[in-house]
Length: 214
Ligand code: ADP
Ligand code: TYD
Image 1: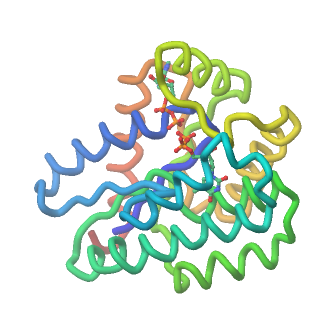
Image 2 (image 1 turned 90 degrees about the vertical axis):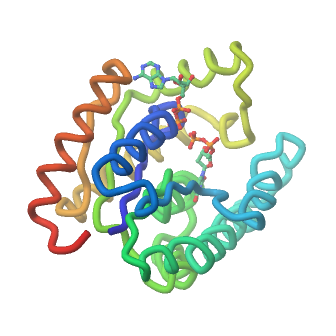
């Protein structure tokens, strides 16, 4: 089973992904669960992450950015996700192709059909079975990121976009959810970390009953 977590910057994805991986390990066994993230998840992907997120790379073109995210994705799919799924494991990814649809497609205004085709090429058509969307208002996500920054958490190049950009990204997520309601589970991310996590676990357990395989 392939599960992804999506949401705006600062929505709490990374926090929730770690806790949810713990839950999955308790439920299905520690050796059955693989937690990964994008961009990253492999040595090559983490190197690409450094390039694409470096504050020094302000001159990066939208097309270069788009291709780098997909290069990292192609690597993690080939090296981590597909092999794990072939062994019957559960893969949980903090971001995946939907992030490129909304940040590069809707956010950077790249052609959506082309974006879809390239994501398909990078992944060989591998789609998540379930995608959680952690929903927070744009301002709250940005405030959490800047509070986190004040406490020493790192900001990256994608944290420095315009308000209009994040609004397009947010609308992009809403559009994707409307297009494929059966895959998405929307979670209110404005509550405490514990509340959000228990909602995620409940919703997942419910969804599990409708999915055929684990
Ligand atoms: P993301 O991966 O979506 O950017 P993180 O999990 O890194 O989000 O969280 C961003 C910041 O918000 C961190 O400082 C984190 O401690 C804080 N945070 C996460 N979840 C919550 C929550 N439910 N309420 C308040 N702050 C949160
Ligand atoms: P990260 O530090 O992981 O932020 P977050 O915790 O918000 O996920 O950085 C990921 C950033 O990269 C985030 O701003 C979204 C962006 N991104 C894209 O623009 N396109 C993509 O395909 C992916 C995977 C991420």
